[in-house]
Length: 398
Image (cartoon, rainbow, N blue to C red; front, side, top):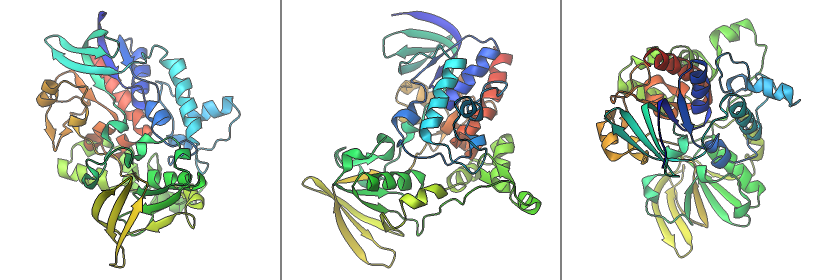
């Protein structure tokens, strides 16, 4: 077992962890970063899909923004446009890994299995048994920690029910009858891939319609640009305020913040997913789940259709593309005593304007910070604001 003391430890090596590390290096702070680079994207999202975010909003962030995804595509002669041309997930992953090699080459590809509070700060334990002493720790946990499956499916075996984040492909479902729950991008993308792989796919959702995003193009008439300004989260003043004023969002009461995060930019697939979905995948929209049961090697779903009729169907497998819900208790690598000392509302961590929790020196970024700073932090685009602000704070208070 090894032991060392550093200024900052970063748990997680996705867009937020890597962008923050690049900024800490520029501020001459000693740090260590742990995790598999771009793990959520490489291991928990279906390959062959496209990003919903425009190209200009799909970068990681070094201090001078000297290596954007546009730069990466230009270097490799890949098709790219700031808007209107979706970025393949494989391109985004490759870009993220190249960013890591250039700006954060010292990533330690090991999991942190324990974070504990000590008199001088925090102690981290790696899966390999190393002990790391640090004054401050930044939790940059990926979204897969917060994968949500509806309670109706509690106790069902993995052979019958999984979350969409558990699938990077669909080939294993060829010839099988699969239900996909949800109406967002993950649900529609995966349903399309399942159909292509030869599965009999049924998409089941409470929403009465699939709200596909419209294509995004430039240039636009000046009147459109004034009425619906562009932002890293899409078109409209609400999205623009979310990207430009996260500190203003932070001042709102918790209930308003929570409602905004839940409702703004709700489930909506990209326009490009329509061609692989419409007319190919069977839809059951506006439904209400009544009963879930296991029958031998199959799962039975009884639900009320949009017209009020009752339906019962059997499937070989159900994929819950039902999104993510932040919950501190899901971060089991944090010692129970530390979780208990961290102030929350509805198990969501309360953060100050510098991403710091009620435990001095304990910070949260990414999805875990979205209820404090808004929908911006649900997307990679939020890593720019987060890394700049947090790195500056950590440098000043070192």
